[in-house]
Length: 122
Image 1 (cartoon, rainbow, N blue to C red):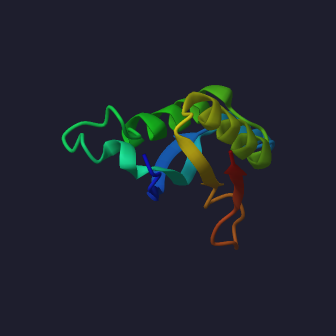
Image 2: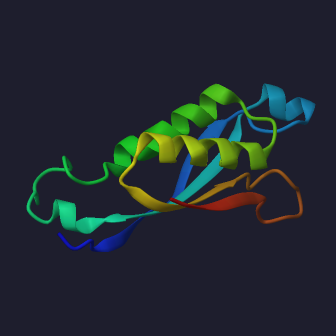
């Protein structure tokens, strides 16, 4: 069967978590914004229009990311993106590539946003 690669996007998913190295960041949750773009084979879901059995369940994906973000209480944004990206690729072998961004919009007072992002290719 010929592969039909497509992209799924989860944009501006908001949650709250401990993330950072400063004292107040270690004790207070802050708003975190997650953006995910995954490339996967859409041809596998063509015949199963009413089920995600052969596709990527993006609800499970974002819940997985949020769970690890909250549990790990990362100190560095860069380590957070790297670690979670690697975990996603281990968990979902159907993903061909992944672009993951994690933002802390309130981290720097005069900045609109602080973000780390990585591109992963299988």
